[in-house]
Length: 438
Image (cartoon, rainbow, N blue to C red; front, side, top):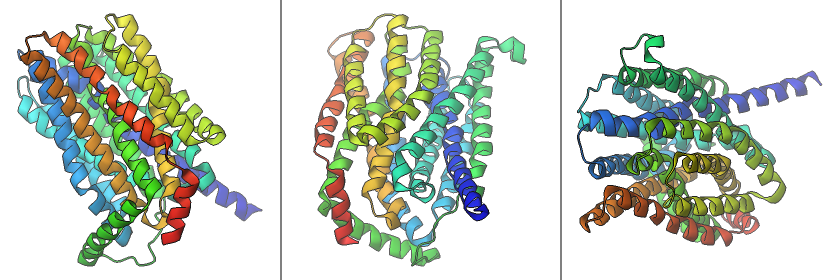
């Protein structure tokens, strides 16, 4: 009995240590990606630049970082699987993101190009690390617990990211209280807090999550060679596995809309004339609503199935993308923030756990490499579409505000097509297809 209890404690500690990485890296997603970087980029690093131009620059920065990760994600996953190196790659990418985030503190007013370079590299580290973090999910959770554990990670991410973001917002609103000369200095210091937070709370996953060894584990050049060969084989497998292929196509489309909302919402709010303080409050609302909502989605996934729960979240996002084009007040933005918080983490968590159910357990990093590759290409398409629509509408002679409103409604196409494809994914048949080739 003691042995069983000890094993259960170890398993719970492994789950918590894994989930704490979401707590760690979500500080970057909230304070940097969604919060201060878009505002600071427009008002400090791109001071005096037309709003449409700075929006296009931000969209392209997000797209470039997405391309970098998307191009190498499947190959890195294959190498990590062959060499049992998921944690090593997680460490490498995480600390690339951490160092580059710390570097943002050094960028001065008007240096938008340097800010873009550091942001692209930091975002590459953030996204690259998530490939290997996601792949470790099946190492810490049984199949029946995948939804709950995945949701726990996202819920802790919302809470941790929200706590640090709230502190950073407080610093910018009352800079003198914290010894800063002005709000700009406080914002720059917040990039340091994100890097430190990310580094410290990443440690448990490295120390307490055990990575299963591949039965054919190799190292060095051999891992690279075998990884490339395995990548070709897996690409052929995915093309023949109808339900995995269909899910990945659906995920590529609907997560495009989700990621675009995350990355561009603050920029959109600024473009239509909302005050920065209202946008920051809205982000905080999203974070703290997202904490219990992600847990609730994990429960829903266990009760009604992850696919139905994801489809419900997609429907809410479709409404958000259409209504968002017509809103005009901070109050409406707050309401949208609540709605986003209700479904954002749930869609992400259940997509991850639903996919983990479908894939071969001995190729998790590689298959999650494809999963994250599509997620990153989605991060390319969405912001690029926003940038293209904004510039085209401006060329037609309309104002920056009108251009921004048209661009935000354009992402509804991703929710519509992604939801339709997801509807036709059959989880049971998907597992049978995988079993037939294993």
